[in-house]
Amino acid sequence: MKIKRIAIIGGGTAGWLAANHLGAELVADEEVQITVIESKDVPTIGVGEGTVPYIMKSLKRFGISEAELLLTCDATFKQGIKFVNWRNPQLHGENYYYHPFDEPYPAGVDVTPYWIAHEQGRPFDDVGLQARVCELGLAPKRQSAGEYQGDLSYAYHFNALKFANLLSRNAQNRFNVSHLQATIEQAEVNSDGNITHLHTDEGESLPFDFYIDCSGTSSILIDKTLNVPFISKADELFTDTALVQQVPLEPTNNINPYTTATAHSAGWIWDIPLTNRRGTGFVYSSQHMTEDEAIRQYAKYLNVSDTGFTPRKIKMDIGYRETFWQNNCVALGLAQGFLEPLEATSILVTDFSAELLARNFPRMKDDIDCSTKYYNEVVRYVWERCVDFIKLHYCISDRQDSAFWQANRDSTTWSSELTSRLEKFSKRPPHQSDFFSRFDLFNEKNFLYVLYGMGFKTRTPKLGANETAHCRSLFESNDAIVEQAKKRLLKHDTWLNGLRHAASQTR
Image (cartoon, rainbow, N blue to C red; front, side):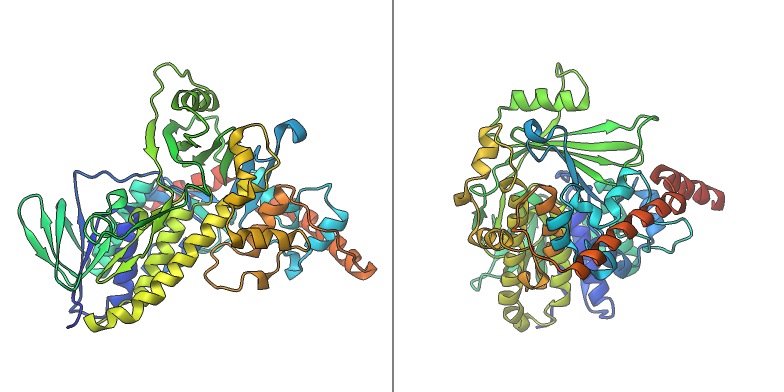
C-alpha cells in the first residue's frame, strides 16, 4: 500500500517545481520514483517571468546556485513593481507608485499613522528605501554579497523556458527524477475514483500510484478525467485576454530592477526586463475593448506600427478548481487555476502549493484522505485572498475614464472579505493582526503599499509629540540611507555585467 510511483503530467515551471519539491522531500526514500511526463506536442505558455522573494526559499532548498540561475536564465533582479497610471491621469498627470519588496517599517516602526497625518505630500513608498533605489536603477546587493543575500529584499525576472530547463536538470541530477517524453491522451479510473493508468498516444499504458496534474489549461487529469468543476472569478476580475510580444533589448536601454505595470483603459501592460530582451504583455477585458483596439494600443506602447503586428494571443479563464486534491491526484500550476499575472501570483501560488504538497505528501495510500481536506482548505484560502489582492488594485483606483474602471469600483464585484477589510482600513491603517492566517500570501505590508500608493483615504489619526518627532527622524534617516546607497550599490546593469565577466574568466 506504499506510494512508490509518482507521475507528474506536464513539465514547464509547474511540473519541474513539483519535481524538485517532491524530490527534496522524498530523496531519502530509495523506493520512491518520481517521473515527469512531458509532451513534445504541447508547448508551455512561457510567459511567467516574474517572481517574488518566496522563490528564494525553494531555490535554496533545491540546491540551485544563484549564479547559475542568473547566468543560464537571462535573469535580472526584481525589487518590486512600478505601477504607472493606476490613478486618474486627468487628476494626477503621469503618475506612478511602487509596490517594493522591503518592509514599510523603518527600524521596525510602523510609521503609517505619521505619514497619514503629516507626510501625504510625499510618496508612501518613502517609508522604505527600495522604491528610490529602483528609480536610481541600482542593484539590490553588492558584488561581494553571498548567494541569496542582499542589502535589500529581491526576487528575479527570468526566461520561463530556460528556468524550467534549469529546474529539470536539477531534479534529474540531484533527486534522480525520471523524464519521459510522451503525450497522454487519457487516464483510467477505478471504481473508487482513483486513477490507475495513463494511456499515451502510442498505445502505452503507464501505471502509477499517485498523479500530479501539471498539464496546464488542458487539465487532462483534474478536469477531463476526474471532472472537478471550475470556479470562475470572471465576475470579480474582468481581464480575460493577454497579447504577448517579446521585444529585443536595445544597447541604449537600461535594465530596470523592477517590473513595470502600466494601466490602460481596459486593463494593463506588463514589461519585464531580461538581460537580452523585454517580455511584454497587454492584458485587457474583452468585454470592454476589442482585439483591434488592444492591438493598436499595444503597438503604440511598444512604439511599433500596428500594421502587420501580430502578438500571440492568450485567453485567460480566471478562477480555480473546486478541489485541488481529488483522490490520488493533485493539480498544480495552470491546471489548478489562473489569475492575471499582475503580482506574479502564478509562480507564487504554484511554488507554495507544490511545497505544501511535498510537506504533506502521503507515504501510504491509506494516508491520502488524511491530507486531502487540509490541503484543499488551505489552497482555496490562498486563491481567494489572491483574488482579493488583485481586485484591490482596480477597485480603489480613482480612474473613471472608461466602463472598465467604473465597473471595478462597483462594490458588488468585491468579495465580502475585501469589502470588510476596506471598510476597516478607512478607519485605521492595516495591522498585522488583520491578516491572521499564515496563508495570507499578501499581508498588511503589501496592502499598505498598494492602498496608499493608490491614494486610499484613511481617517487621520492623532499622534503625540514624541511619536511624531521619532517618525520624522526615521524618514530623515531613510533619506540619508538612500544617499549612502548611491555610493554603496552598483547600477543594475553594471552588477549583471560584472557577474558575466567574472564567470567568463573562470571558464
